[in-house]
Length: 172
Image (cartoon, rainbow, N blue to C red; front, side, top):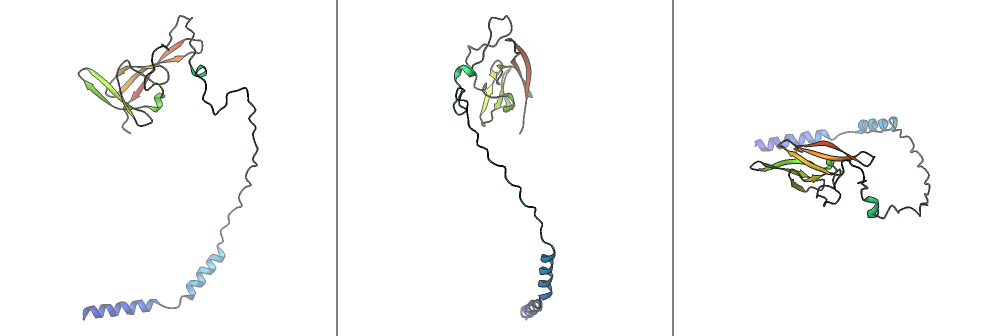
């Protein structure tokens, strides 16, 4: 009996909700008529100007540079600090130091290796004496918190100066 009574009350309430909605519809139409969105017209797009490439004597931008253009020029006649260009490049010497992250360390006895992550997601184990970075950087010291790297920076006169850089442990 209680179920029938509650069902009857529900039907009564729902029928009471059905009624004249003309005042609501009038309000909606007047509100839409009074509040018209004002969107400014779009600007005229710039005119396209065709560019003619006229540098036939120069290298095409779509062809990689020749090896002679990318090799470093070192004046060995000067008696100053010079990098060893005869040595084989290390696996992380194609990355700038900004593109490498120290992710941790490994140790065995007194030897500590750094774990470096490159931008392509690969992780490498490097120790003291190995090369890293674009400027002939050699790892001078590995600690649990950072790596000290000695880089050779050209000074513009044919000599090179040593610069110390650090890569700190990064958790992200």
